[in-house]
Picture 1: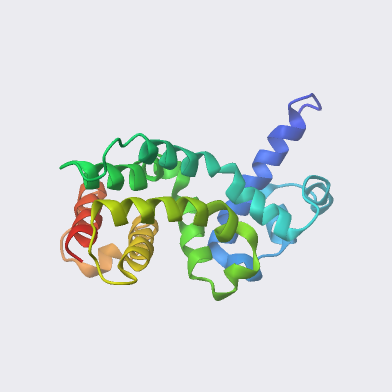
Picture 2: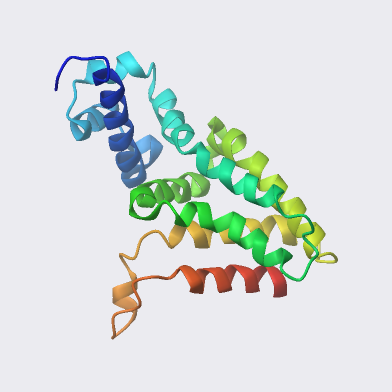
Length: 202
């Protein structure tokens, strides 16, 4: 690779791409910086040059995708009246469309989000608490306004259930084992109906 101005940024991106995949496959505790270096095709010392610790690298992987959450919040805040007939549909679209737009590029990221959200030790790291929970609270508040009168805990739990459905839908490794005929290649509209119905009728 040429030793020019862009090379350090390119190497940093290559490290983040590799780290996203390796962390998604092995989890935070199961991943070593040596594995990331091998996957990125760089020396271990280069990772240390860009990221002072494994935690710093891990947080950087999520921070790089933070524009997705920012877009979700932008769309949510554009809804003038969440109680309007299309209010819930627009909340669902704000919740899932920016994630779906990542397409294949974001498949590893969605796996990683699922793994981090399910990891009992995740609260020891700043990822969920700082990068996801502020957004989650805004969506929960919107659901509370759009669907008043639900029982205690409904809004928080149903949000988390929707996160699980959205992130799980990123990979279809198992789906072929559950059907005798190949399922449709796109599950986006089914996912949209599933989340909408769960929020509306749960």
